[in-house]
Structure formats: structure tokens, C-alpha cells
Length: 196
Image (cartoon, rainbow, N blue to C red; front, side, top):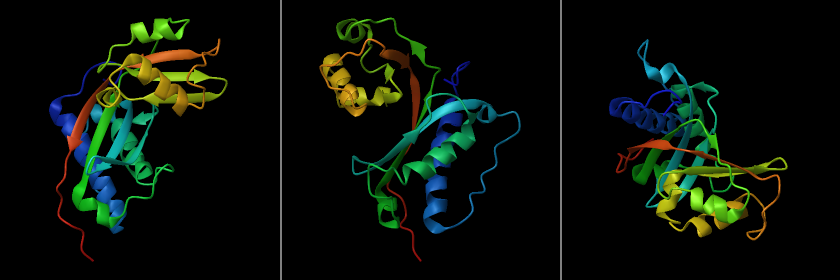
């Protein structure tokens, strides 16, 4: 969902493996040497998120909401940044054997014409829509995968408002809502431990 066409399953799996390779390279202090074939759609600009989990617990999640660089570079950068997600302790070598790596490739966000919280809740498609809220220089997003943990649209909105620093009952007049979709690809654990 790079904005024009969906990626093939092989390309998506390649991105997930690339994210895992980037984490491994950073943990071991080695160089990442993955070659992207010429003409590959992975050279197209795209927006991605990389999510790192250990035993189902979030260890990092960082991404971009709008295409800024080639997909393969976006994934590597976001994998490295997810290892140092400021909300969590840094990912370490001890995390590696049980680390699940997920890449979400985002479609281009589209505005939602909702003037009230109730209108927005009614317009959302649980399990399908990622959502961006922005207002007064603040922005917050939930990937479509968050619906698995918060399946109710009202609770989903309340949690996203809280994440953005707004009161859960607040609905600022200048609040903008944008929806996007994503394709998700995983490179799951278990992994061989990293030895010195």
C-alpha cells in the first residue's frame, strides 16, 4: 500500500526480514549488507512502521505516516529507532531470541469528514482503519493492528485522544482525523541467541 499499488507477499516478507536484519546488525555492531534488486518496488517512497515485541509485550514501535524515503530505507531507519523507543527500555541482545518483528506498510492517509466524536466513531472500520488525529501541533496515531486490543470504536478513540495528550471527553474544534490502511508482515521468533 505504497499509495499506488499493494506490495507482493514476497516483497512484504523481505521488508520484515530486512527489519530483523537491521536489528541484528545494530545489536552485534555489524554492517547491514542487504541488496535491493534494481527496479524493485522497495525503491519506491513509502511510509512504514516497525513494531518489536517480546512475548507479546511491546519493546518498540516507530514509523512514518507519510512517504519520505524508499521503503527499504524507511524500514531500516524505523527498525533502528524502534530499538530505542523513548517510551521503553532499549532492546538488548537478551531480547533477540524471543523478538517478533513486524513491518506495517501504510497507504496514504485520507481525511475523514467528521465534526463530532460520534460521527468519527461511526465512520471508522474496526480492524481496517489506522487513524491519525492532529490538532494544535500535536499528533497521535494508532495502526490498524491496535483494533485487536481495542475493538470498540469509542474506546479506540478515547485511547487515541489520551495518547495525543487530549482529554478523552475533549473534541477540539480544529481536530483533524485521517484514516489509512496497512499491510502487515512478520518475521517471528524464535531466533538463535547472539553469542559474543
